[in-house]
Image 1 (spheres, each protein chain N blue to C red):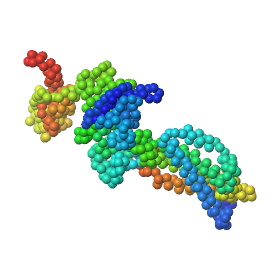
Image 2 (image 1 turned 135 degrees about the horizontal axis):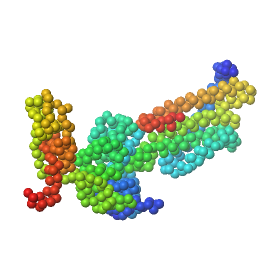
Image 3 (image 1 turned 180 degrees about the vertical axis):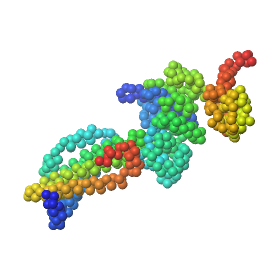
Image 4 (image 1 turned 90 degrees about the vertical axis):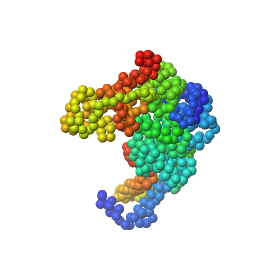
Length: 229
Length: 369
């Protein structure tokens, strides 16, 4: 079995072509990144607003839990039927939003209350407090949310192949249909590998983005493990 | 100058935090607001920079109603120091201190340069400027908090229990540092604390608040200790107030008496055994300890042959130090030193008490004499 998987993975013929591994990996990555980027554009401002004002925090929790309870395949199929074709991307966006939203929201809420109080007492306006104090200090948890979302979307993009969206899921499904288990297993390995590599890239990016002082403070207070997942 | 005019604060749930309170903080002085938790002291402080709006009454800052100013603009002109400092974790010490000047639009370079000067001024080294708050101790963070509040040179400083999260030794150091700074800068300071000793030490005047936001007494610390307005203030001021009040009684008229002295390094020939306590001094005439009556010295006199002395009273400082020196000395003789630490003479507890009594009953002691 393992030799068959290796044989499939190492056969150059499988890598090239429109349905080849390279093309599908590229599509898989493209869809996932696109979905997460759109989710970030929606959820980060929303999470910042809710965290900053405290208004609508019930929404974050409720929405997050409801989303977690939804069966992924059902949601993807439903949205694919509603939007048709590549608009099934919308399903991935919807899936990515809760993780980014709750990461951003809890990031803002986790900013030390006395630092925010000091910012207010020193004469920062509401907007200055958000941009200059809350956002930089929320970055560790915010990036944790983005990484969670990316992992989730990576896995779900494979499912999205059921509704005709390309990606490594395509190989997996066709492998299943033709009884080519080495293709199925090979694709599964590639999906996992891609997910891990993307997560590593995001971890590196997060390292660059999060201010040094915040990293030091997190390391000191032992909250590091909370966002390093 | 800060003026509270019949301010009252009632929250939506009906709880009254401050009850029709009037109080004036004179320009250039420190007023300590002290009281148990729930007495409304922090509420009162936060009314000054509009972090809390009074339900009725007005707060005047140099004669202007604070409500006439935009909150953010108002706050930039008032120094604000809080418990645990509230430093920004993502900014270096230097950039934390530069915060308000930069809000005022000063250039980053200039604000940072000024920040470094301030960092030194509050007793930290310039290199600390490049560190992050989490790399500092609690006491150091609090110093940075003070530097940050002073950065835009505001005339008024609000301090909300700034030193209560640090250990007693560090706290005493911070208090001394604040008193030194205040001597240089002469800010109008409103200082909230739950520690009556801190209030008495730092306040030019102390406002004692009672639960529910009532002003129980507003007076200089010596008056608070000498004449507490009611039972609440009496119990809040606490034990030993008669003794503590001596911190505010000057020691003029206290005449130190001479005592036999020897020097470290003297040989046994120079130090005959005596029936009295003998004080040992070093080469700079600073007291080092006592020789027991009838003690004999073998060879040269060294420090380990001495009995440790008590506290020292500096000439001209309050009477409390003189009495404590006498009570803490093994010989019962309180050692008096000059400003440089050089030996002047000794006083007994009897001396100090006579002086106190002479002031309380001048006629009586004159008659006796």
